[in-house]
Length: 380
Length: 182
Image 1 (cartoon, helix red, strand yellow):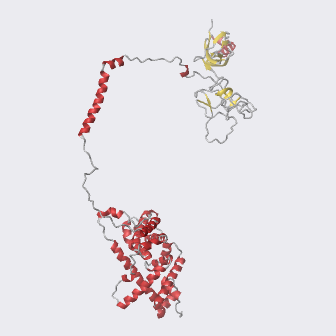
Image 2 (image 1 turned 180 degrees about the vertical axis):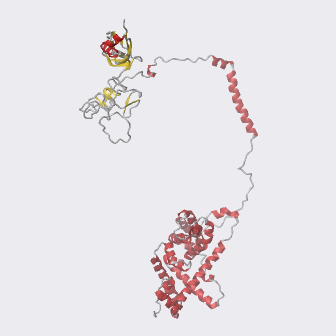
Image 3 (image 1 turned 90 degrees about the vertical axis):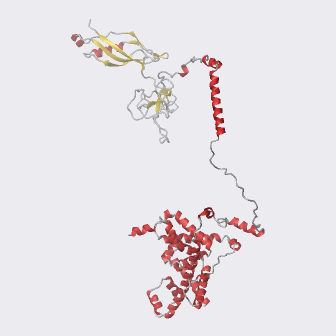
């Protein structure tokens, strides 16, 4: 390569972006070498000048500032950090009205006592405080000790008045029963299980659920004592345990719930409970005597027969039976609690089913009441 | 070994890092802005920013490149903001227009050579003052700070080819000025 480097190639040589041939040529050719050296030399002296200049200023800057004027070093010079509009305004103002000469200070600082500091205890105010407070306490005691006040305190009578009518404060005894509901369906309520009894009802039971995706899902409940044993059916869906098996329906009632009544319960009554009646709770169930429920009493009685085997064995004793006396006065749901055997249990149950009772009463109405009956077998 | 070398580069021992890199950063800013006071402030700002962002330093580049990157950004921001404050220069006459020609290191030259060198340096200095900001930054980084093209590309955020183009143009103006001076 014999042609000289172009001006552009000289520059590229300095940048460092050259081919091998160009580099060799620059090394060999005197003309090109001189041109490169000329430019490179100027730049090198420029670099040296800049470096020494900056080092001068650096050396000047790295002087140790005495530690006394920390605050002065923390505060920025006023020329810095001034917004442009303010500096423009000050520039204009400076042109219009030159700054006045610095003020000649003629006043002198006066030495004053330091105002911030620790105070010792002020004896006078301390004594005053003690005297005043003890005077107040003493006067209260002295007033209480005087005979007039004593007399007043001793003779003071605090009447204890029993309220005349306690009924509003007493808890309603027993379960009143009753509940019902429905969504005005044309079908009768379908059979299903009862929800849990609870003291509060957040959502009524529904056989046909209208809102499949509730924001806040709650277990449906009926209002009844939570420990109540319900006569329930073993089904998955909710419904009226006394209803018919059929397509799911909430029944012809109203107000949520299931059945033909009103309110959020299940059954024919009104309210959030279950069964006939109103106001919550469970009705149609079995009561026990006591607590507002009168015990059933016997009206007519049929003597049980002896079974053949028992008579031959000369067997005697007592059969204990559990019965439920329905409002009609008949024994229902007879079960053996204590058995004798030899056919005597069956004979006792037969006889008791023929007995006639005066039903147990609650609130003036006959209700089903549970009772236990001893049927004794004796050979004369 | 590699790991140990990297650890000394992490910004943990910031004080010694500042001592090491401050002259370079200061020199670059001073050569870019030609105002000693502003250069000192910006150098300070540069290390304050670096200290605040030292957690973000990923170690992808060398720490010197990182400092230079911050410095280049500061210079650019300062120029764009000072362009708005055109009146300030007229109100505060620049007392710090240093004659660069006086700071040429004395190497026992003859007075003629010294005068010639002074002439060249002043010419380059004048050209550098007139260069567009990018060309000047690239020129200073390459020929005063002796960085390679890749490093300059990283500092300025340009591609290597772009850096080369700016450098070429800057050098071309320097060359033209020098030849005109002759």
